[in-house]
Image: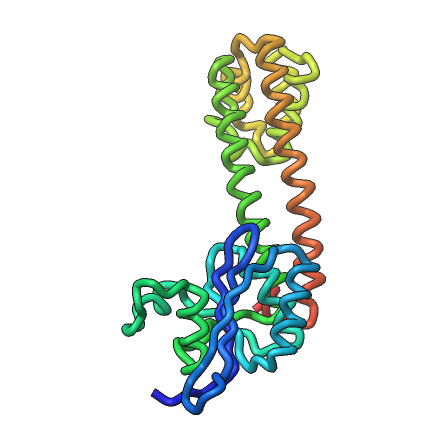
Length: 255
């Protein structure tokens, strides 16, 4: 198989460091020499690696997409070098590897032959938007779990608010829950905090708010409400940031 890159490097990356094999032409025709060295995962170490790769006139660097460990290496090296991220399974399934060859050496050999194909790495604006939307999705799920915990605490106190309101996340429900935490126990007074549209359910609401709500329940409810309000504030900040990031791309927000 033809050599595409006479000067290539392969990287086996872990949490703390990376094993790097640099493959360059040998002293005799049609031969090559390989050197393997270890570099730390800190910024200074990665910059030292970049200088060494540049000094060796490497034209391609191949690394596997292992967890998130590849990211600092990839983005710092890609500023001045041709860096390719490859699928780990695809790299291992290419035939011809010797059992005593390290991952870094094998990747350097694949790089020299331009194998396997590079994985797509989104540009920075896309990566930033993905970070934001993933965080929003995770927090939304966490808020749902927190509401489940809150409802469990209410059930323990025989308060059946969720059987009357559509969701505990509505403003009327928040008003009632805050009043419970503040010490209000009168079902009639609590029911009066509901939205006008719920007045027709007044009798059912009073019945649902009649229970054995104690100071312990108030304490637990406050814990869950504080967490919910904190998540909602963070979600609001994320939404604002997402709107700002997607301003150059209107269809991302409205189409």
